[in-house]
Amino acid sequence: MPEHPLPLAVQETVDTLRRHELVTPAALFLIGHRPLAFTAGQCCYLLAPAATLLGVSGIRAWGEVLSDPAQTACLADYMTEALRHAA
Image (cartoon, one colour):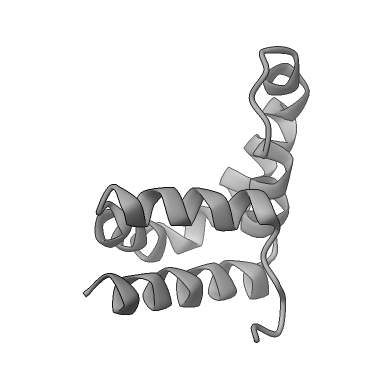
């Protein structure tokens, strides 16, 4: 069990990526841009109200994950596990 459990919206997104066999590029993108994760998380917080008005949910959950370095590491671990199960 992860130390910091991921929000359900984030888990569902990773599971969708796994079904479409896109976890590898997403994991590489996440790991390669980890120094910018906090900034991306803050942008998600900024865009969350507008996204809700447009019917897009889960943006705030992504903001929470990307703004916290421990949660970002947990997301990377979750993606790595998804890669292992996909292989």
